[in-house]
Image (cartoon, rainbow, N blue to C red):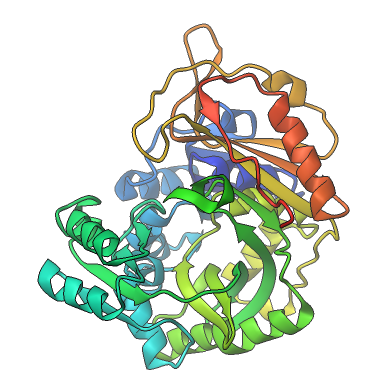
Length: 420
């Protein structure tokens, strides 16, 4: 098969590595990719947001399957356009991708179908929003309605913090994404990321992870796109998997199909394990980043075969097999992230990681300078994954990998998957 992978980050690096191991793969094209991804497939200089050019590329190259990595092309309807051309695409259509593209849509959807979630209200002007936040004594969560690269969320402790978050977002902190905001009650409990493969009303459990969103140790600092993860989640049990599937994943799959917008592809449900059971914090319509880097190394089944089976409607007959190993991923980010940061600094030591047993290095945002040296090109730059028979062994391997990298301009959290 000829496959086109859309994207260029750490998630796409993990996807490319998994796809490249499939005996079904004849050629992997990656648009736009990165120098690191160029070692796994043929790079094509087409932006992930350029729907017209991606469709033209898929037609010209006669690809058999397009795997859409990032959320924006999905929300913008790339899968719909490919479908109209008769080209198979792995990822939901735009109507289903609204589960991630609009938090208000997702909350209204859950309310319609009695899927457990916190109380919420949506606003587009500050006065009413502030009154609602005050009714919660400022102890709330303020979210941009649209896509904000994982950073459009502020967890507020008091009224002053809530007022500042409301005003900043409605003043355009996240551009069009925060023209409308949600304010939610602040629920408590451990978090878990649940991943399932959906084909309309059919849903198959994939894996779980525990993400670390805050920038600094001990869950301090602003929210980020993710600073590390562990898989499986330390809270995953057979009973909890059953609860999540019965109360959340399968109801979502059935309800989306009933509403005429069947969901196909990966569904990532960010959940909080409250005293009343799991409740939905958010939905993502694709593999997460860095969750892909911590989940996919544990997959023993052929990922390309699974994707192909889903697009052909045979999901209920596919067996997803997973390694009993645990995985821990640590993200290395540019100093200043998720605020302002400098790019172009040189990263040394990556060669030492090649061939290391049970350590994988994923490039989320690197480039090559004129001399061929690896440099930082974004906020989140590398994701180092360690594997082991338990989470602490995997954690040790991940941080061994981090220690091999010489990059003074970067930083990472030191408490990913730490026992508390």
